[in-house]
Length: 177
Image 1 (cartoon, rainbow, N blue to C red):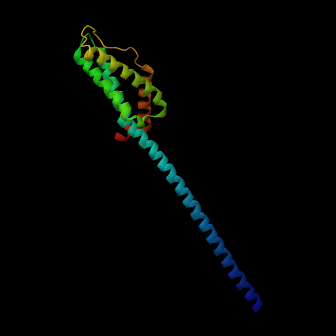
Image 2: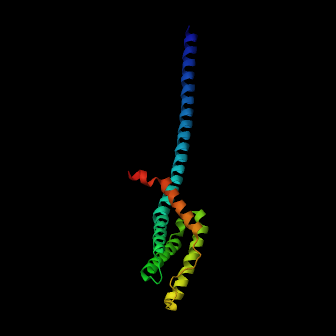
Image 3: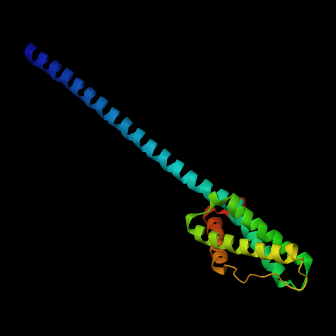
């Protein structure tokens, strides 16, 4: 009887040892998996935060100001008449502001807008050069309107679409309500 008792105790102790050992291994495996999942989520959060922050900064510091300057210049052009110095000054200010934003905040440009930004830069450089030549260098009052006729309308559309896309993606209005 004693050998049966000893055998039962031996089996019981071995079972406890094996289950404890297996429990330890499973616990360690679970901790490793949990740590791996947490690290992956942290990487993804960092990635999404970086994308969100880029889009937010791009919208706030570049796309929105450019959008408003384009609106202002379009409204000015609607009322632009011969030798209207006030409207011409507004147009010049808008052109210089957009050019400055593109050059100073170009790092906030989404890649797909770079060719359009290039078109804007070319147009604004041309217009400002024409303005300087006619109004400043030659003091030309005979030329009623300063135009270069190379405004990149596709660039304006692309910037407007990206502005709207970022506003929608960032849910600006939804977060304000």
